[in-house]
Amino acid sequence: MDAGTRPDPSRCPLCGESNRCALEIERETGQAQPPCWCMEADFSEGLLARVPAASRRLACICARCAAQEALQT
Image 1 (spheres, rainbow, N blue to C red):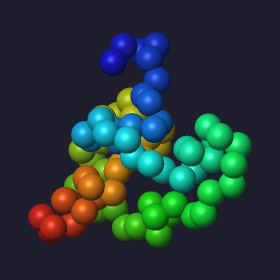
Image 2: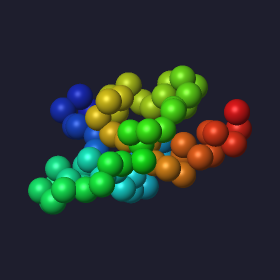
Image 3: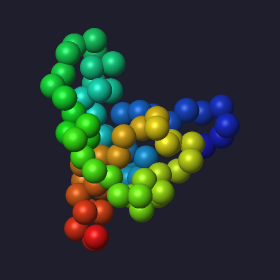
Image 4: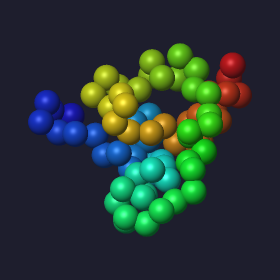
């Protein structure tokens, strides 16, 4: 990704699949969503460290990647 390209906030920065983040869906559609699962999740420092620097705090990790990490710890 070049310096002028922002990450796609609807895609997981680790696997590239849709992250289905309720916050992003609400932003895109303007329709209220229930709280996203990620707001209550605990992400390990190791998992967060795997997110590319350009995507940090700009795109949510998907539930599948978070669950895989939880199984490995």
